[in-house]
Image 1 (cartoon, helix red, strand yellow):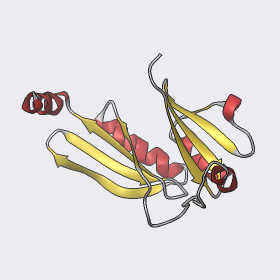
Image 2: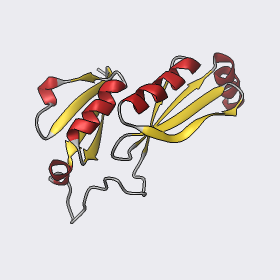
Image 3: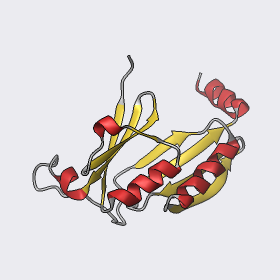
Image 4: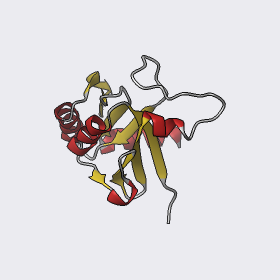
Length: 143
C-alpha cells in the first residue's frame, strides 16, 4: 500500500464545507465522519478532513489557533485533472457548492491549463491539466 495523505482543514460551518466537497464529487467516508468532522475521499490514497474549528484546535499545541476565513494562506492544495475540460468542470462544481473563484482559469504556458477556487472557509484548491506534449517536453528538458 502506498502512502496516504490526509489534508485536515478547519471549518467555521461543517454543513457549508460538506456542501462544497460533495459538489466537487468527492465521496464521503461515513466511518470517519460525525458532528465534529467529515472525511472526504478524493482518490485511493488522498483524503480531506473538514474539522469544526474547536475540534481542529484540539490537535494544536503551543497556543496555536486555527486560521479560518483569514487573508493569510496556510497552503495551496493542488489536484490534477485528466482533461482541460475537467478544470472548468471542477470550477463550476466548486461554485455550485458554495465556493468561489480564487484565481480564474489561465494558460501560464502552452499546454498547461489551471484555475483555483476557494471553499467557504477560504481554503484554496488549485486544479490543473497538462497536455501530454507539454509534459513530455518538460520531462525532456529535465532529463
